[in-house]
Length: 313
Length: 282
Image (tube, rainbow over all chains, first blue to last red; front, side):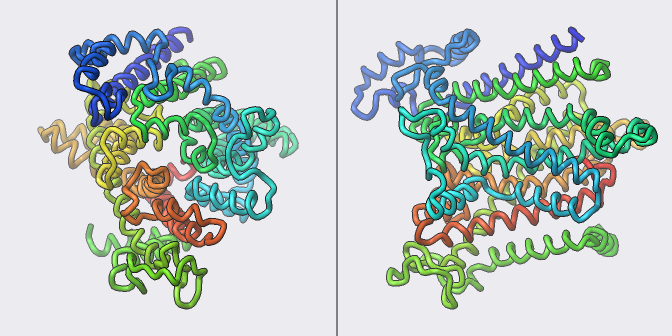
C-alpha cells in the first residue's frame, strides 16, 4: 500500500512539474515584453534594459526557467506587476469568497444530485427516473452566467430578496458575506448537480445488481436498509470522488460566475490579470489551482487504497 | 457507409422519440443559422433608433436590442459563429485527440509521457485553461477555436487511448500483424474503425461543451471580439439592459441551452445504440 501511495505521489509531482513547465513556456510565447509591460508607455529603453537585468530577463530562457522553477518549488511565485504585492499574497486575499462559494455550491449540488441519483437508480426506467435524467441533462446545458443573470434579475432586482452582486462592504460580518453567496452558489449548485446525479445513478445501478445486495434482500432486510446500507455504502467511494473533483474544479472554474456576481475571488483575480497581462499572477494562479486539483485527486487515491484493498493489486 | 445500413442506423438511433426530437430541433437551429441571410426577417446590423428595446411583438418576434436591431435576426446570425466555432473545435480536437490516443494506446513507450501531459492539462478547469491560452495566443475567433481545441483534446485522447488498449489485444489485430500488415495500416484501419463509436459519442458532447465554453469566453470579454455576433457576445452586451429588456439576454441563452441540450441528448442516444455496455456509465 505504501508503495502505491509513493507511486501516486511521484505521479503528482510529475504532473505539477509539467503544469509549471507548460505555464512558463506558454507565457513566454505571449506578445509583449514583461519589462516594458511593467514600466508602461513612458519608459525609456535604458529603464527597460535595467529592469530586464533586475528580473533576469536578459539571461537565456533555459536559465530563467531553471531559476524560476527553483523559486516555485520553494513556494515563491513572484511579484504581481500591478498589485504591489506577492502573487501568493494576492491569491491568498482572494481565497475566502472562492472557498466558501465552492463549498456552498458543492453542498447544493450534492443535496440535489445524490438523493435524486439514488432514487433514479432504485426506480430505474420509471417516470421519476426519466424526469431526473432529463433534468440533469438540462442542467448540464445551461451556461452558468446566463442563469446567474436571470437569477439576479428575478431574485435580487424583482423580488429584492437577495443582494444583486458583490461580497458585502469590507467591514461586513460573516453572515452578510455568506448572504451574498446564496445566489451564485445556487447557480453553480444547479449546474454542477447534473454530473453528480448521473454519477450517483450509475454507481448505484452497478452496486444494486451485485450478489451481496440480492443476499441482503433475501435475508429479509427492509428495502430502505438494503438501498442505503448495502447499496449506497458501496457506491459511496466513486460518488465521493466525483464530488471531490467537482469541488476542486470549482476553485478555478467558477470564473464566469464570480464575474457575473462581482465576487472578489480567485477566478476574478485571473480574469483581471489576463486583461492586464499580469503574467506572474496568471502563472501563479494556474499553478495554485492545478495544485489544489492534483492534491485532492491524490487524497482521493490514498483514500481508495485505504478503504478498498483491491485497488492496490 | 452504405445507404441501406445508414438508414438502418438512423432508424435504430431514432427509435427513442426524444432522440429524434432532439435531432429535429438541432437541424432546425443549424438550418436557421446557415440560411440566416435568406430567411432572417431583417438585417443583423440595420439600426432603427426609434425602435430601441421593444418587447417581443408581431413585428419583432423576439423584440429589439439597444440599437433597435431585431433580436430574432441576430440570434439566427449568432448561431453561425457559435455553432461554427463549436463545429471547428470538434473537428480539431477529434483529429488531435484521436492521433494522440491511438499512439498512446498502441505504443507503450509513448503512453507514459502523453498521459502525464493529459493529466496535467486536465488538472486545470476548462474555462481557466482556455482563458490562459487566449491570453497567450491573442484574441480572435480563430484563436478561440484553437484554445478550445487544445482544452478538449486531452478528453478525446483519454477515450481513444482506453478503447485502443482494448482493441489492440483482440485476435484480428494480432492476425493482421502476423500476415505482415504495416503498423500504420493497423492503426488507421483496423484499430481506428473499431474505436470510431466512442469517438463519435465524444464528438457530440464536446460540441455541446464547446458551445457553452465559447459563450462563457465571449461573456468574459476574452473570447471572440465583440463585433462578431455570437450568442455569448449578445448576452454580454444585453446584460446591462436586463432590468428593462430581459429578452436581450433570455433568447440567445435559450438558443445556447437548446443547442447544448439537443447535442447531449443525441450523444446519449448514440451511446446507447453503439455501446450497450456503456449505457449506465457517464
